[in-house]
Amino acid sequence: MKTIRKGRWTLAPLGLAAALLAPAASAAPPMLAATPPMGWNSWNHFADKIDDATVRAQADAMAANGMRDAGYRYINIDDTWEGQRDASGVIHPNAKFPDMKALADYVHSKGLKLGIYSSPGPKTCAGYEGSGGHEVQDAQTYAAWGIDYLKYDLCSLAQPMIAAGNLEKAQAIEVAAYEKMRDALRATGRPIVYSLCQYGFYQPWRWGGSVGGNLWRTTGDINDTFARMVQIGLGQAGLSKYAKPGNWNDPDMLEVGNGGMKAAEYRTHMSLWAILAAPLLAGNDLTKMTPETLSILANKEVVAIDQDPAGRQGDRVRAEGGLEVWAKPLSGGGKAVGLFNLSDQRANLDIDFAALGFKGPVNVRDVWAGKDLGRMKAYHAAAVIEHGVVLLRVTP
Image (cartoon, rainbow, N blue to C red; front, side):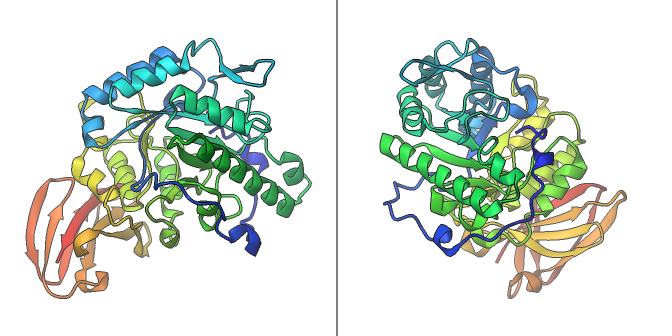
């Protein structure tokens, strides 16, 4: 969400107390997000210019253009949908969304799911009505509407504690608030994916699952530039052990197709997110994207790497200057391998298969080229364009 607040919250990671790290005592519901959630979110492209008609148009496009068939399911409304609470405290959408249940029914009719946004504080990032003090009411309202996904954005919660430097207390308040909404969502009986958006404060990868999160933001906001995308993506190094089916590290939404990067850079973006087993939430206008953008977002081989049923996040293998090799374990003993050239000139990258744990010959496929490279014994080298990637699927 909005960067205007992030500048005030420049916090060093803070370890959690043992009690906060302990798993929740309440029984967990059936697993949601067994693979990283895939869908679309309104914020990156539309921001506060989102409304009912736009959401319906995005759902129409996703259902018709092949994205649904590639695995994309969620149509997520971000901030600025909120209206006022009535005398009983029940939240109502504003005039941009005249009937949220009708909208959910429409999205469901397309074989898709609807997501919504709120905050554990009194206000959202954009200053609209938050869920603080109304968690049970809001969860019941979302369930009655037919909501399938909640993005819960930190924003105004515990700001006085943060401003005063009392980070331990702020952290405790935050954890308790996320637990409160977790319990409220579970009490509805409706399966609602729970997305924690709190920008990586206090190392949420260590505790996000224990408060019910199916995914948790590990970073500040992405933007549509190569430098920021790379900074966020590479910042996931070392976090792979915290991801598993039902619980995912979230390096923020995709910028593919928003126009700030070249096609090769967007393939780098998509490849890195797939190796990271990151949620794939498109952030462009699905009704106006080019065939090239669609070919990146809906590439079934790349999506299959992200959605691999083993549920393993990849990690860095080696880095030298602007050249990096990352690998993700796949079901069946294979690995997805990304050869990333983040420099400003073409370069050659190589990979030693033994260093990836393979014994004996392997079969190698170039994923973006859609081409089998054949059986190889020990070593492969590839020329990679500037800001580009060669994405390989390597199998014993």
